[in-house]
Amino acid sequence: MNTSEKTTEETIQQGIVVKKTLGKYTVRSADSRSIVCTLIGNLSKRLMFSIADPSSMPKRVLEVKELDTVDPVAVGDRVSMLLAADGTGTITEIAPRRNKLSRPATDGGRHYKKSGPREQVIVANLDQIVVVLPAANPTPSWDLLDRHLATAEASDIPALICFTKADLLTADLSHEIELYRQIGYQVILTSAVSGLGIDELKAALQTRVSVLWGKSGVGKTTLLNAVEPGLGLRVKAVNDHNREGRHTTTHLELFDLSFGGGVVDTPGQRAFKIWNEIDDFAQLLPEMRGYIGRCKFGLDCTHTREPGCAIKSAVSTGAITSRRYESFLGMKDYFGSW
Ligand SMILES: Nc1nc2c(ncn2[C@@H]2O[C@H](COP(=O)(O)OP(=O)(O)OP(=O)(O)O)[C@@H](O)[C@H]2O)c(=O)[nH]1
Ligand SMILES: [Mg+2]
Ligand SMILES: [Zn+2]
Image 1 (tube, rainbow, N blue to C red):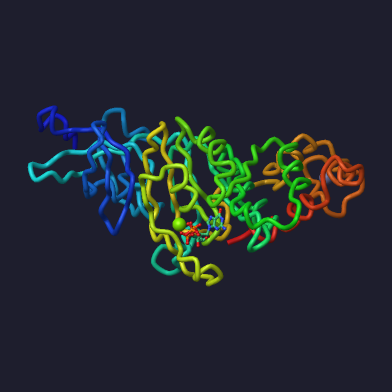
Image 2: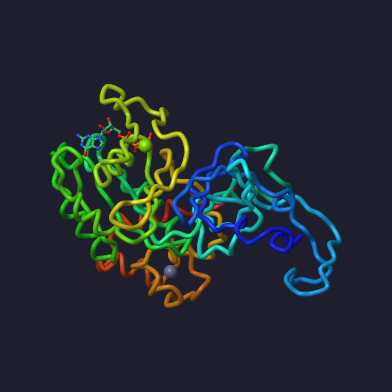
C-alpha cells in the first residue's frame, strides 16, 4: 500500500524512534514533537514478493511470513509516519539502517526458531558505542570490556571507553588505559562527583548519536545527567550500590543533547552473544587483525595450538598483550554458539 497517495502531504512526517514500550513507539518528528505511534500491519510481517526486489514491478505478494526479527522497529530507526487528527501516528515505513547493534533474542520458546534465535535489534543508526565501566567499586572487568569492544567491532560501529567513578580510584589504571589507547580506542576517565572528564566526554558526544553500554550500576545514567543536567534522569540510590540485578533504567531511550547529538541510555547489559557470524574472533581485536592469514596454516589457524602462529608469536614478543590474547581465547567459548 502506498499511503502517501491516499493522504495529503501534511499528514505524513519523518521522524526518529526514541522509545518503545509494548507495541507503542515514541517518534521525535523533525519539529521536535514526540508522537506516540503504532505500527502499520504489513510491517509486522515479511511479505514475499514474486520477484526478489520488492521495489520493482510487478509487486505481487506470494506469501506472508513471520519476521526474522523480534520487532521490526528499533530505537534510532528513521521512520515515516501517518499522523491522525488526535495527535497519534502510524509508522508506515522504516528507512534502511546505516548500522545496528543486534543480539540473538533470548526469550526462548516464542521467538526461538528451529534455525536459531531471531534477531533483536537493540539500537539502529549509531555513530559510536560508549562502553562504560567503573574505574573502581567494583574494580573493572577487563574481560567484559573486551567483549563489549568485540561486539562493537562485530557491528562495525566505532567504540570508545569511558571509565566512571574515578573519585573512588585507589589503584593506578594508567597502564591499562595506555594499552587501550595504543590499540586505537579513545579512553576517557570520568567522575560525576568531581566532574573529571565530563567536558572531554561532552566533546566526544557532540553532534554524534551514541549509545551508553555497560553493566547495571556502572553509572551510565549518572553520566548522562552530568553531561546534560536538564534531563534529571533517575539513578540508583546510593545505598543500593551493590545490589546486583536491579536495573534503575528499565527501557532504552534516545535523548537529544542541547550541545548537539543524541545519546541512548540503556538498562545495564551483560555482554551478549554476537549476532553476526564470525569466522575468526581475531577479526574483533584490532591489534590482531593484521596478523590474520600470516600464520603457517593460513586462514585455518585457530591461533591456539598450531606451530608457526603469527598471533602467538606476536604475543611472545609483547606486540599483542597476553591479557588481550586471553580475552580472545575466551571469546570463542563465550560468543561461539547459541
Ligand atoms: N562515587 C561515584 N559514584 C557514582 C559515579 N557515577 C555513578 N555513581 C553511582 O553509581 C550508582 C549507579 O549509577 P546509575 O547511573 O544508576 O547506573 P546505571 O549504569 O545507569 O545503572 P542501570 O540503569 O541499572 O543500568 C549510583 O548510586 C551513582 O550515584 C561517580 O562518578 N562517582
Ligand atoms: Mg541507568
Ligand atoms: Zn594463528
